Image (cartoon, rainbow, N blue to C red; front, side):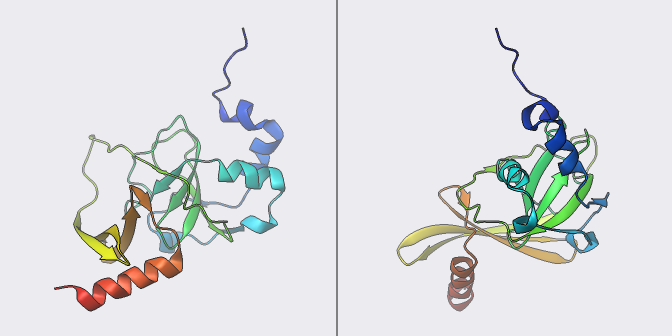
Amino acid sequence: MQRKKNNIKEIIGLENYYRLISLPFDSNPVNPTDIKTEIKFDKLSLSLQNIIMKLPLVKFTGRFDDGGLNKDKQFYLMTTLKQYFLVDTQGSNYARYVSKIVSLPDVSNKSIEKTFRSTEYIKVLKRSEQFEITFENIKYILEITEENNEAFISIEYNGNYVMDKELESNIIKFFNNYKI
């Protein structure tokens, strides 16, 4: 009987693991503006590109130190729906090491994993509103979240986030023209 591989080092191999953790990361950031490091996806080796594309995708919740990640999964892709980040938890339940990742291929076919909320403390206050929008005979859910003096807009279709920038822009323009 073959033992199941559940450790990231075993799954991707030691060489790829050390290449991944050797990428530039910012330590313990709070907001996207804290991120100074950047990884150009198209400049990475094919093996690292394949590994990164298989990472779970999670939605940015307002703070990188908000918690909610599974500490047993070391690496994640995180999205603000405008930017993407490579996250290394290093065994914690939050985004401990983060780097902005650019030139990432389309990930709109990836489902966004749910994150859990820590009940140990309350850290983030936010206001959120959702709207159902019918744009070009298709129903979308537009969510506006205000948090830490910033606003984030996400658009969902059938439970998946819209990742097409042009479509997202058109839906937001439509919303702004017809909102009450």
